[in-house]
Length: 133
Image (cartoon, rainbow, N blue to C red; front, side):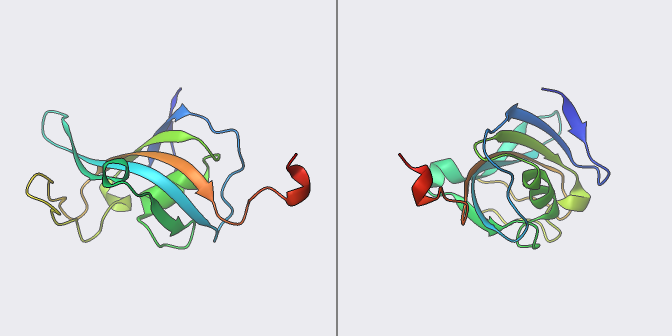
């Protein structure tokens, strides 16, 4: 899949395009995400992995309840899709992220991050009863 760059500077590449709807603004969504910070030399160090934690991440799309880069990058995904987001520092964590364990890195304020994200669920867009066979 081609690398796409938005006007804001966010870059992304779809790994798998979902077959479902896009999340409407304000809807609660559930994602699985692996968040990584690049180090000199290009190595990516994971600082959040919802799959290893055993529970996904939930937020309301388009409401500012997550960082700008994730909000923007997920807003154009389709349900079931998987995308890699290359988030510049201007759309990243304005206050940084403190290490949550001895093995997790600290993410400096305004640092670029890379996020692999899967749009797993959109609350309120369940199938209607008459659509179920």
